[in-house]
Image (tube, rainbow, N blue to C red; front, side):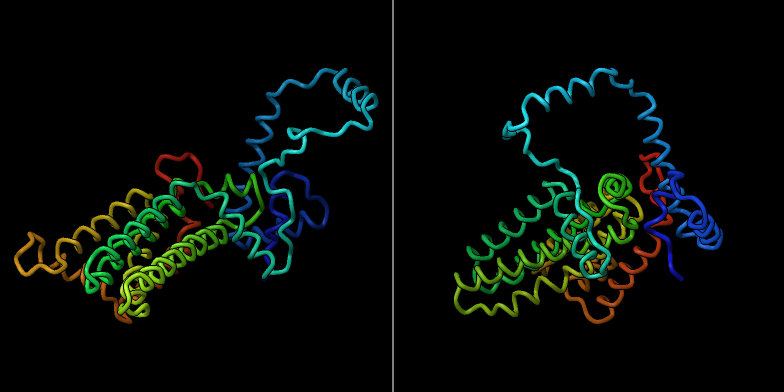
Length: 312
């Protein structure tokens, strides 16, 4: 089945007529996913129309004044203010799948708020410094505690329900929210893993005798389930749930690591936390299933308990 995704904005705004409009109407009758997207676009078109209707029309003489000004300065060279680029998406992202996917992915970089990148970079850099100052035998343990936490917090901050993909779609490009979410998750995890790899390589160079492969394995294993948990809670509930859970799991692991005396944690908590930092195939498979389920459910759930719109 071919979905008329790119025709939905025009259809919702009433600009699609004739056979095209009839074809979209027939498709929406049998496709709930496209119907919910059409309703979202219709809400956006209605809001834009209501807003513009409240704006007073310009003076009749303004166009004449602009033409007169242009006619009197035909050779004028625009200054820096006139050539400053407008911060919006102005180019078509293309129709070829690979080119389009790359365009959507790269545009997420400017839409993710800077505190997300700053916090992740600070945690990874701090972990690398601590690992370099600590005895070599503790380096892997320190990285395993910092890099996964950085990834989990970055995922919650970039992908959670307090972000607004519908507003992004209206301002940037008509892309299904699920695709935007996938691009955002991919970019955040790629950036975090790359930073972790760079920190590991720097640490290996500064502390001879430590194997880079062992260090990467130590932090990449727990990164997967911790990020999956944070992602699911942030999307299905709210970012604070993902952040709080990631910090709670991190604290439980910190209290239980290297301790032979009781730490006050119940055995059930320890049984839950320990496999996250030493994940086997079952834990990794469960993490992948959690992420996949979250993607399937995300467009059907309210975007936020504090928001008035529905991410559909």
